[in-house]
Amino acid sequence: MKLLLLLLSVLFALNPASAIRVHGDVVTSDDFTYLGKFAYGPSSGNISISTLALDPFTRSVNPSSNIFGQKIALFADMHGEWDTIEDGSGSCLDKLALAGKSVYSIGTVNTMGGMERLNFGVNGRRPHWWYVVLVNCQPDSVINATQTQSIDPATGLPVVVSVRYDVLFTNGGTEWTNQLSWDQHHISEIAITFLIAYVLVFIALMAFVIRSIKQSNNQAMWLILSVVVFCQILNQCLTLAYQMNMIHEETINESINQASWWFDTFSQLGLLLTVLMMALPNQANKRSSIFTICTIMTVYVLGYIAAFVVNARHQADHPSFNEWMFNNWGGYILCAMRLLNIAVIVQMCVQSIQQAIQQTQNQASPRSVLAYVMFASCWLASFPLITLIASMTSTYWRSKFFYGVNCLVTFAMITVQVGVAYRKYMLNRSSEFKTMDSSKVEGEVSMSEMNRSPNASNPSSPRSPQSPSQSQFRGITPV
Image (tube, rainbow, N blue to C red; front, side, top):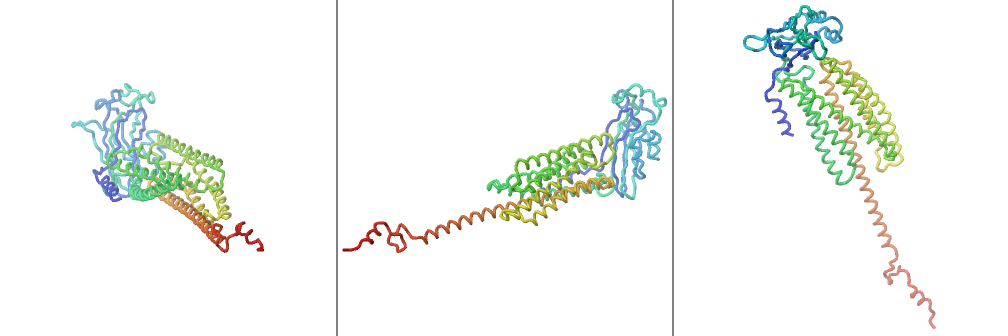
């Protein structure tokens, strides 16, 4: 554990970057091209921009072929202007007017061969987003004639924007937070906390797995719980990797974030499977139970895939939006399934309670089953509730707040599952001991009965039965 903490500290301490970097080349016929966004906190920050005009035909640096009218604009969400811009309403000039004074012409290469750099200070009393956009609202008749030499292959229209850009976003605050967007602050601390907690739980589970293999007792449950916890460990590690990628590489690697999301999804699916397995009555029909569980899990898998695909397409069409992952029809299917699962689990647990009343041996008490039903129902209902609240929560707080809530709720449910599995394991062991003790007592009773019965092997015993010869001998009357 000390080694893990030391490793995490070293990874965060090595070469901290000073900003998030967004860079690349844009050659397009669109008059309005979104580049990137960054959330600033209440303290002051900075935006540093370097631009360089490219030849629209050769895609190489050529300041003499600069397209006239290219500008870079900065939009703040102070008054909700960006929502109007993203919706596509209004002309290019109308959108550009909403940027106010934060509009700058694209510079050309200077005498040193570098790019001109613009430093823009950001101040505010509350968290706010800033968006960076390349625009060219000039009509075709005004734009330099060189733009007709190049055609955008995506649209088949003449190129109106041809720029190489390099944007650095720097937040206010300490050196550990100024390189991250405000909506990503404190996620790394949450990830480290739950990573340590899950490692401890995983070590305990490994001990139970080894013991269950030796005793052939409840192996499937321990193995599934171990996979669930291991997926959560990978989820926390990838979350830290995503944070450190932004800190050290100055870029945003969405593939790491998506991998982290999928490991969390695998963990949630495994946890759902353990809930269904524990709620299943002991005397239930195995075939029908397996069919029910497989059907439910299949719908969950399809719902998660649908939510991921729909959200990915929405992000591709609206890259500047901050939608909740499950605020789509795939997520709504998952919400409906969670609520439906409450009824399924309640029905299963009612049958378990009835069995507990009829057969008290090796069965959980009705009170404990009822408590488990209530906790599992609250956990299932938390997903629709989180989805509802997330759709109404400010985008500045959404990522970190609901990341923490999801980690807390998942860890609580995993802890309960481990506790219930351990109690079931102890009940099975106690029933085995009782069976062994009862067989031992029966053996002792039979032996004592044998000791108390007449001893046939000892003819001299007064309580031994008389042999036929003895009875005949005693029955002879002497002459």
